[in-house]
Amino acid sequence: MSHTSFHPNSLHDRIAVQLAPLLPAGSKLLLGLSGGMDSVVLLHALNHLAPRLGYTLSAMHVHHGISSNADDWAKFCAGLCARYAVPLQIKHVDITSLKEKHGIEASARKLRHAAFADSACRYIALAHHADDQAETLMLQLMRGAGLRGVSAMPFMREQGHQLLLRPMLEFGRMELLAYAQQHALEWIEDESNADESYPRNFLRHRLFPVLEERFPAWRATLGRSANHFAEAAVILDEVALADGAGEPLLAVAKLDALSLPRGKNLLRHYLHGQGAPMPQEAQLDDMLRQLTGARDNADVCVNFGDWQVRRYRGLIHVMQALPVFDPMLRLDWHGEAVMYWPPLRRELRFTQTVGQGISREKLVHGQVSLRLRSGGETLRPHALAARRSMKNLLQEHGVPPWQRERLPLLYCGEALVCVVGVAVAAQFLAGEGEQSVMVA
Image (cartoon, rainbow, N blue to C red):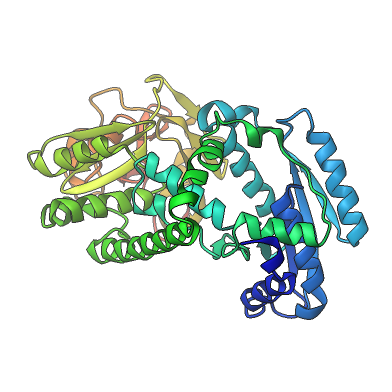
């Protein structure tokens, strides 16, 4: 679009149409301000629209410290906001610990979003535009991403207690440049934007100018494709939920009953719902094959990164890989309400109660401690029951094999009081009306 054909009022109107239904009168709107052309344009437009739409505008500049010019950028943003009388918060972050694992761009993005999340503002405005959308789609395609990866950046997305808004997604970079020039705006140029070793810059400077010659509508076309991918991803989410992805433990039989693509979709969504990272495609294929192809009593364990997927009694368990533990571990209990148990990476809670669980009076005859199995332990779970070996007791209660050597056993002196979460020894059970403690 040529500069002369662009009307700045149209940008205001098109942004206002998007924001007006979402921002109640008196809303607090926080702008992510880098100082680059895109965010400077959005600052100018949002400041102009604030009286009309009835929100209060503030800005946040995240100081990554990556560039030697970072301090100058922060000063520029402070001066700009001072001229507009827009409150500015400058947030310093340290990229060092994330950089090696995620790379500079992804680490900076994570830290920016974390900084925004710390804000009390409900509405966060970001300056992404149509070129950003197209660049993101192309980068994800080059990585072989799935539908979720190639989906469009949405105009609106809930994140925690906040609503992220991208009111400039329908504008190309040249439209924003025309607006900036007509309003005589000033901005900073990040010197890294010229560095073509960054994939995004390579697309911007090398690939897209060539596309422009043959396909002048490439921004809108790629944006449409990204929207189609986003809609398809929603459908796959719904299919996965209907297939059982939202259940606490997924049954292997549900995977078995599905076609291969649908089974992979269910497993992928189930892993995501359990907070696990997404395995590579080959890892996912191998995981599905092992989970569905093993004998019913087989001990299946598939490792991916620091996580594991296991199968037990027809159910799939997803967890972070359990740590190495000291088999001689012993922790004395002195009445604490909570104790951390390292072999299972979990907290144990001691709840004071009456007539349930373990008799307090019977615990006074020795030091109470938590230990691990050493072999040969037996326990009578109630007065009329036969004495059980630990192996039989844990099998009867469906304790998965990988937890059996890690379970905390509570002792009073050398007497086994209970296997936490499984059973209390009959001689330590609390009577009716007796002061007691429950451990879980």
